[in-house]
Image (cartoon, rainbow, N blue to C red; front, side):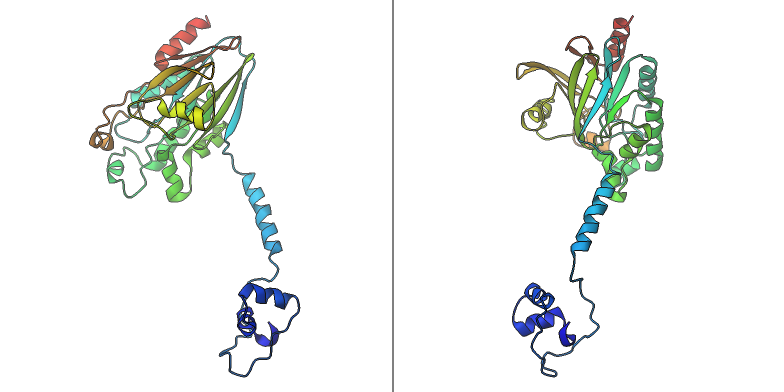
Length: 325
């Protein structure tokens, strides 16, 4: 700056703030002459922040827009099933916990085969697909891992590829998201992109056009207001405070539940799936009991607004087959 003086030096000479001195220098004002040695050392080649920062902000805004082109997470998604000729089923599944030594892999594989062989049966996957213990403050989870986390992701990828064309959406649970905390890698986002289905992040609204009817589902892994004494309480409060929908589906608690509700003059459904991991050391220490591998099955009709939920995937698939015979 003027006579080898920095902006800070000029600010001291003028007795003003750094930013005022910067404006005065940019306006062409010259600071008063310096008495040799009065201001201490001078630094004629001192590097400063740029005077014109508009270009920086413009590039930042432009690059942010470019980055957003790569972000596949969405808060709302639409599924078109206009051409169905009868009722459809949606398996409400979550908490796979693939990789844990406690996971019920036999039932999990049987469900994959059942979905694959049942016409017009789809799935919504509600997160915690991997067990994913990578946080150092959770040692028992590490000790109970049957396979390393990388292979857990491979198992999720294989399961979703087997269900290609059946998965309607995915969300991420905290076990999946621990990979984001540790390494900025989201396995559910990665798999969703690969099988080309909507990824709703931690949760979102799914609008389904089934034949002549439109159904809305809000889907989350976990949410506020939940209660161990009233398993569907969090879903109903989500309708009240966050987002209304015909159907609400939350996971995480490992306690299956179905509740039919008359809400705002309409029939609504609140659904929670169980878990393929019946227990672990954390569950036993917290007195959470044993979780059943119950995955409810939702049935939707295309010619009239009708919703029905079956307690198990097996019952729902059997009923769906009977409807379509």
